[in-house]
Length: 260
Ligand SMILES: Cc1cc2nc3c(=O)[nH]c(=O)nc-3n(C[C@H](O)[C@H](O)[C@H](O)COP(=O)(O)OP(=O)(O)OC[C@H]3O[C@@H](n4cnc5c(N)ncnc54)[C@H](O)[C@@H]3O)c2cc1C
Image (tube, rainbow, N blue to C red; front, top):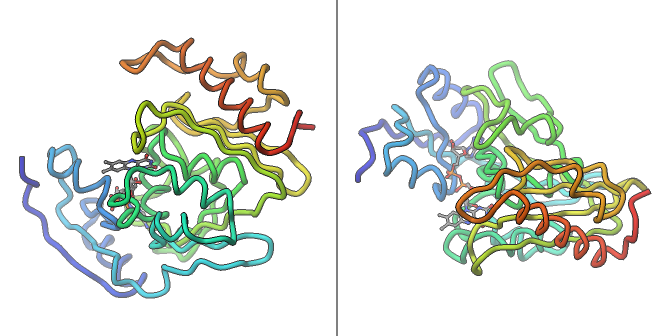
């Protein structure tokens, strides 16, 4: 199938992106790496009247240290995240995203805004307590990752807003484990454990509509906290069991026996 007809604009500043979105009056969509948006447009599951291509916007590709955090501009590609050494947890997570072609085009801002419950970066964002910078008609606002994800492929972003970057705290210790049926597939379950500011935080992806911030202090206790649903990949119990095993691995690789 082909995409439905759309108008295409390619602004070079955030202000012009916001102006184009405002003019589209709810019918506009940002195009970043296109790895998620273009397939759904081709299936006509998304039919934006205006496509606002942000790939030429200046200043959104920064990747640097900023006061204990690593700032990741919205246009930083997964490949660049995988290659950097400032935030080893982010690098490990990015290496697990899709295949080389997907990582070459897909962006951090796109992954966060797309809010796929199986995606890796949203889980890292929730586990580390990341802050998302959102530009909108009223200026910038800063949203805790936990408050951004509202459901599968749903966020609290307004249609006229844009993610410009994410600040990820750098954990002192961390563990990452995911289970996917085949290399490059979306994960069935991802567990991230991160020690940030002395607190051990755990987030689990693939077991609910959004990344779940788990309160369990030991992997074995995690099962009681999760309410996954069964689907074509397996039963709810299967997913729960995989989550506990991934948590064991993530805790072990972090060198953490128990979250305090
Ligand atoms: C074969 C395949 C395998 C994949 N496997 C994985 C995987 O294992 N793990 C994983 O996490 N992902 C996977 N992906 C998805 C990939 O990571 C995408 O790159 C990502 O989900 C979206 O990023 P993008 O830059 O391509 O965004 P786009 O596709 O351009 O946009 C996605 C959505 O986000 C919106 N958007 C984009 N940027 C912004 C912004 N700055 N502000 C506000 N809204 C914005 C768009 O309007 C759109 O609604 C896979 C994709 C494919 C095709």
